[in-house]
Length: 189
Ligand SMILES: [Fe+2]
Image (cartoon, rainbow, N blue to C red; front, side, top):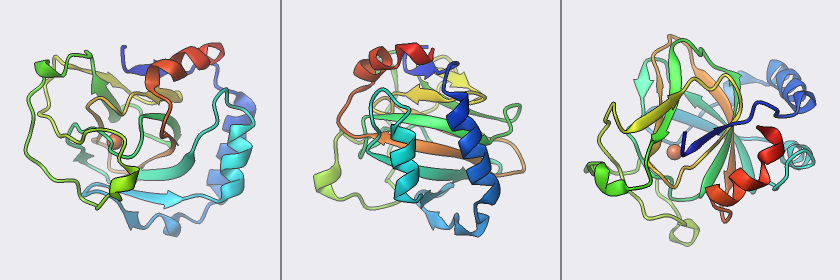
């Protein structure tokens, strides 16, 4: 997959730490809607710091995302980050998936008229915005059973066909692009 990189060797010690963190986490804090179908909650700063001690390139930010049951995101480009580290916490891997464009050539995709659901500070925009039509042949899908690096500068999104929330950690790389990170993370494949 060109724009999704599965991290089979993501450190177990960190995954175990997240498992404990999530078990004790007050789920009622997942309440900041950032799109029509998903919520985000900022996590304590020390969780970002601790996470970064394990990673080859430190994240700029770490959030928890919760995608509503029975919802699909329109393929889109993230305005505020170049690449993302996505780490599953509670995902139904049989009934949900993330997806990213298979090819680098965006002219293969059809643009879609749509607005972002939240305002973005213009000083924080790092990618040209855009929404795209879904096309079965042009997206790679992955069930997020393992952590991934995802190129969110390319059209991407997620589908949750489960009756439960789909919950994962989402780390931001604001300046480093995906290709640089794929190289930097090679010990995690
Ligand atoms: Fe996104």
